Image (tube, rainbow, N blue to C red; front, side, top):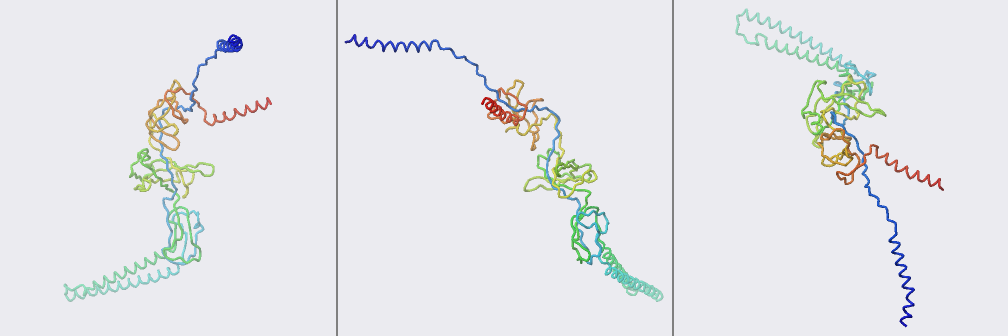
Length: 405
């Protein structure tokens, strides 16, 4: 019985042994996998080669153009308008002393005639008193009265007559002045900014007729902070009367599709800080005679003010300077390194620093958790070009698939 069971199990055991031997043989004679050396991918970064040079620094601001001189023309007398100059229109060009408006003179001419008569009458009275004073002096001398009082000598009467003559002449001068003021003239050469007058209109005293501004010199009020003042080396009480001694400034604005520029000078400060912005106002003057292009009030201009010059400085893009004034760069061994620089000046587009080696490759691309010493691959093309290359590759694959189909 036992032998029968053993004999029956021989095929099963043999099958198991064959399977085990087969698995062992497959494992023993299997081909060995090729071992490839792992190469870490290099980090690709965009770099810009920076050189040291003497850098001119500028301060920037903005402001509105306004005329340095502007006046409201007011009538000092009342009357009927009988003449209006053709130049007395908005935008009209006027010259100094030009008659812009005339009022009816007849009432004032008659008043002058009356005042002249008063002067003649006062002069006659004075001559009469003088004659009487001389007669009184002769009579007192004949009587031997050397200690006669002033009234007996007609001195008070003489002083009164002289005062009456002066008063009459003063009234005559007032009348002539009123007559002269019926002609309203331009106080300076310039442009009419506004007007509100017509022939036949009745003008009252002190009424505004027009507004005129001088177009030879314009002003722009600019705001500078403490860093700008240090950059310009400008004292807070800066003041100059001579144009050549002012601080140069270039003003510009976009007119249509062109950038128009004017040269000017900062002549003074406003004398006070803005309590809201904590900036100091400075006044720049623009002389029309020193510029080819005319400038008009109301223009909003950008100002670029020449400051100090820094030697052996480097100008970097704003994106290349990280917190704590750290800058990442690529050394000669093409590895990523970091250094700290001295920040000199920063504007909207660039940063001026000191402390970098000459002809160094600065990393301008954004870095995520950078590590010093990492091998990198430098790229000089713009990031947009890389994006275009990536988008073009799938298109080429689609063309190949279409060709195979």
